Length: 540
View 1 (tube, rainbow, N blue to C red):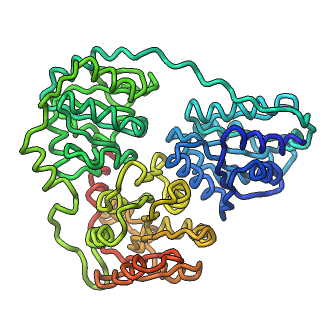
View 2 (cartoon, helix red, strand yellow):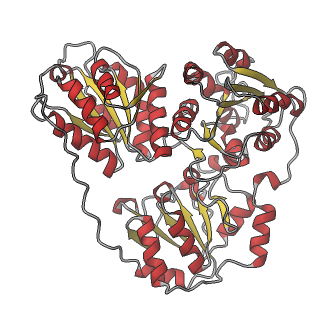
View 3 (tube, rainbow, N blue to C red):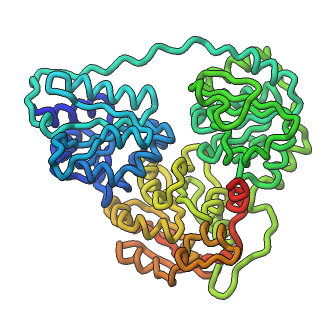
């Protein structure tokens, strides 16, 4: 075997089951070897889309996913998606062919590029070390939950490897010592109105956190990225932060103790700190010591896994079941008032435009409950994020750590492949939809029964509303685009929605065989910025 073939087959043996990419000469052989080893490969239309598909797949499956790219330009095309994955601690392995001769047109400093966006870099240095290098890269992705760029130099890829050589998985790191949770337990033991906020790092800890919440009488909430984790609990406040409903924001603001588990407690989750009451005490649990207090000072910090810490605190509370924040009145208010769809609003619809809230509430009722929702970035994003319900933490895929528009469609593709039991729903703005339009071909080619909803206001809406004080807006507004026709050209069933009656076509699609994906070009009214955008810009 050659190094390229050995590396691909080794990664399949180590556990890579799904890869995405765009194949060129430099990654042709390693990709084919990965497929020969048993992995599935999805060819995207752009490396940026492939990177985000792999990111979303890893998030929704819990597996290490692979992205495979050509040397130089293939990697640079994928960098935005790689940056999103790295910022999100996604276990992603980037198989990047590498030109090491400075005179090559494809030469760039690939390890420096990886470092610049927060990814770890490993190079296959020689034929003798190739399998060890591959195993080390995979272990970093899997055990440290890192995005790792595995550079495969062109001159090394063609070197021979002993056909009898085997890859040996790198040993998992030893388990950390039991966390000292006594200070956190003491804080919660005296809390009268505790709230637990779970983030990305606590998505595996639902049962432990609910047990702890029962023990101390806490209400529970999540950051946006962990939305759905506490679905079904009568004490769930859904999402904390800019997306929070008025009731959720009020109850969190009145808490006397707020504990973040696997959550950065950043400006988005705490509304620039305004969700924390003046007398409240704050605690934070994270596996990284450097994450504790990074975004705001905390009174108690615990370094450890969220599930382990939650179990330790529950044990320290000696099986008590505190009343805490849990009164009949609070439970009844949560049941009646928590959802955004239960908050009254003045409908903006008319003149050929539909209110995005009216649109999304109707879609929530029309689409099956077993869904996985992916949301692009922009002024519109709060509407699908909060008005579309999700069944659990695997029903919402939120690639927003880098705040790039254009990632939503690829996110939905990766999530759909990881969760084939659910209806994939991609919620996009018109800007992000047109940026990523080439991947509509990927949706159709894969036969995904996806619903793509485009909130089309003919603008980069966030900028329109941010600079609405008399500034010229010609650089961020556009003529009407028939995005339904674009979708139809890619083989979608497509409908233009200007009023609620137009949604009958969506109902017919849902009730049909769903053999073709559906694109909804929703001409939305946007006379004002969305509530979450106004909140976010207060901190700018």
